[in-house]
Image (cartoon, rainbow, N blue to C red; front, side, top):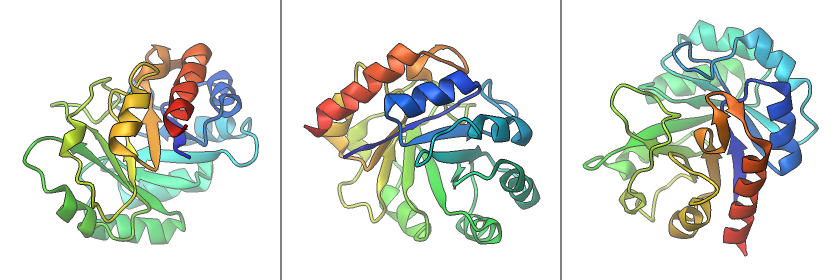
Length: 210
């Protein structure tokens, strides 16, 4: 069954809508330039409303090791998501220092060697594939060509980038990822989730798994 992550949570109501709607994980953005940014203290408040067995994922973009460790100490996230140009050595070291596993994100565009990229991060729990948009680090609502994803990647794939209730069924059937990650596709405004869109997205995922 394809797992579901709802990213960019900023409100308790949205965390609950994601959890009650069937999401396996919620994402918290610790990147100051994002409209979905939350502080570690705010993230800790949001996590308190989550029911058991819903994972929290902390998204970082080229943060210092100390910044990540401070955030993990305050917010107690279950999984790190490195969404910038973090090196394999950095990811490995920070993950070990925090005692928290990690995902490595890549913004996909033609000409990249995704196989080699995945081999460079062998200790990552998965490779999160997002759309490349110049000057941004995600949450753009843009898709990318799913045919660029090799079928024999050595890491599980978390598919992101422009997913919505309307296209997630086709996306899963095309890529067969271990999980899908959505943010803007279930929003009424940046950082404000729509419970009906979350429910429709989850239905789209489950339809693909039939």
